[in-house]
Length: 106
Image (tube, rainbow, N blue to C red; front, side, top):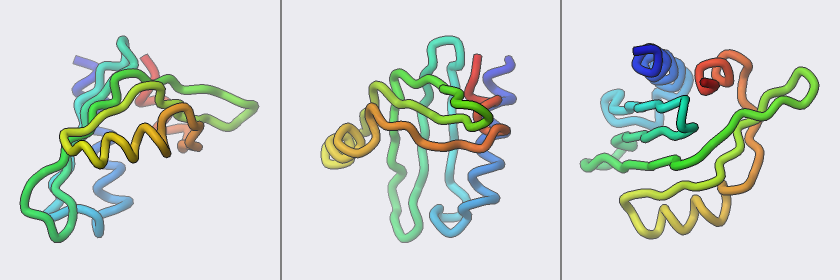
């Protein structure tokens, strides 16, 4: 049940911070914090079909007072996007606000 509330909180955060990226606010997140995984689905601005991204393994890392998201495994329903995500996202640390880090942690 907690994953559902955390998913809704992240959806609200992203929709409010980046509304220009989505067609009619079409953005959803399904978190599984225990497994360190999530599924993101969005219809991007100007597109008619949603894109799905599966983060199969992530973790939140702390360095001092900073929080980072580290994605280990990721794929998409679009082959070109899967390749791009593996090349540019997997294995990298992405700074995230503490509030988002708290939602992503189990």
